Image (tube, rainbow over all chains, first blue to last red):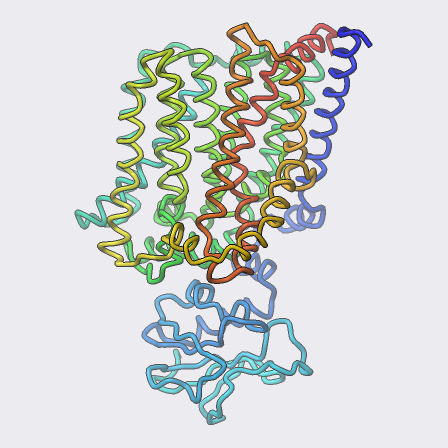
Length: 167
Length: 433
């Protein structure tokens, strides 16, 4: 093969590589069809509904429930950062929705709810059914009359230790 | 003109947020919609007065129409791909508010809290203090102006990225090549995906990536403004992520070497160091003396010292796999990696470059290889593998892949200014496709 033929061959290969790369790029960066249809059908959805779609209804409704009920000057005891509390046990994530409330991260080995907490989260476990073995927070006893629930089976709610709730 | 305006907007965004940060932290000035508006207007006026006032190169509407009618069908197709992808990006950013993990726990959280409180506050752990405030403060800016969703600004940055990059490639090649390069950049999956979320990776890739392209382009053209753009963008990237230092070292090395040919490069080095420290020093001072949070990112050398040799050697396959994924694996980077290898192949096939216009190719190649090498070393050294091997693996594969985006523009630039591609696309142009 002389140099001219080699160059011509390699140039054609390169052209195909470029076109192939562009094609693959486009294929891999296309938006999802369902997402485009959702936007077409609901162009002016509210912020809350959009977040509900992205985070999942169970989690977002719970955060809304907390925002509505917890007064701003509270210290909230949350589950440890581990499965099944990936979001509700992440102090950064909970703080995003509950700021300026203070966050007190819990540990599995905690003997009771710390004194400085004014409220504690009751969280069963994210995306978990009733048969989940390690689910259920807090792990310590609490008085049922101090708890208010978003839903009871499985339980998601708040324990009021001091200071009450918003009206 | 596109390059001047594009770089100008990027620098104005960095400077505005940085000056607001300085004003609030050191002078107690409040973060309000008015303070943001005043500083942005002042900087835009200054930019116009110094750089655009006497310029007569603003494109006129009738000329744009003529330009559009003169496009060939293949150019129309490529332009359509670019416009459609930018349009999709705008749509997604307009529609979805920040909802990704790090956006909620850090970037947007800080932005919301600053807007609510009117001051820089609420940063209370090492994680939140480890990243500079650039993107958070432009979230704050838009929140104080009444926006419900600040993500539209990421579309602006991405659009500027594509336009400036396409314009630089056009100067070195022709319209067809620049459209092709622009389309490849716009559609690169990881970039496209990162441009739709409120993280700092895409923004960092825009600043550092364009800085690298301008540096290599300067080495070919020796135009002073390209060197200035490059330095301005690189220094300002220190305000986006705490990862600019190795690139500053790389740029200084390149400038010192190039200075033997053109003294301008030597004269630029103090400017680069000064501009970088202008962003870096007050931020570091704020971290250590006001937030009093240290140690989160300060593992580096001590982590290596603590690690034992077997565990380091055991990580070698992980490092090689991440590298090969980034350089070869199509789905991750949409072919850029494979094209990078092709560009190396063609550099070997055309070993003797004599024309001035062919220099960017070789320089780009060298800078890219050096960059990847430095980046790998950095990735190995900064993460806390002595403490948690699993975390290190996750960080290496995930963060390193995202941080590799800074090399995409230079890889594409290198390929499109390379002699084989240039000849090939010139040939295509003659075919009147």
